[in-house]
Length: 231
Image (cartoon, rainbow, N blue to C red; front, side, top):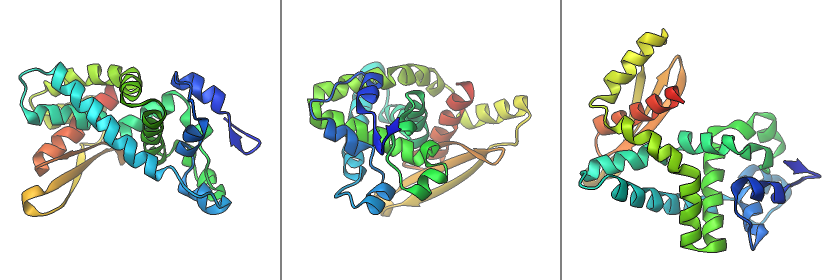
């Protein structure tokens, strides 16, 4: 919660289950660029988000390697992408009420920024980066596991779906929703091209995913959507 213009860091630390030796790192993780611009802050949470993205990706990749022994790289990648994506991280951020603590510019706050997936997902990764700097890798690993292990365990059975796109279409039909609609974009050189797929149901984003091929990215997006609909 933001009181008197500043977030209640003690309450947020209680919700996170990590007492920061350097609370300024946690505060920085909450500074959106809109607040930085309006208040003349020297930095926003974007650098911490960059670091946190790498940390959470590593920890979940390690978990996938250990939890799925003998599985091919593609399946490990599917698990990581299903857990480490903006939608999934934003949902975890909502579960601890992170939006209440964000430092946002006036316009961003008025426009619903405290519940915006991109802002919440980035801030959650920034907090992971802050935990890493504050306590080191082992502390950050423990934090990520505490926050995301349930998500990992719930996602693994979904990976066993032979065709997540077909399964998602069947779920939509049962619910009376519109059929899933996919949009996919690729970036990078041909030999290292990465595709990002977004699936929409009833006009709303239900899942996103990345992969080395368009089909793989759409399968990951469908798995994320299946998990979201099951939540």
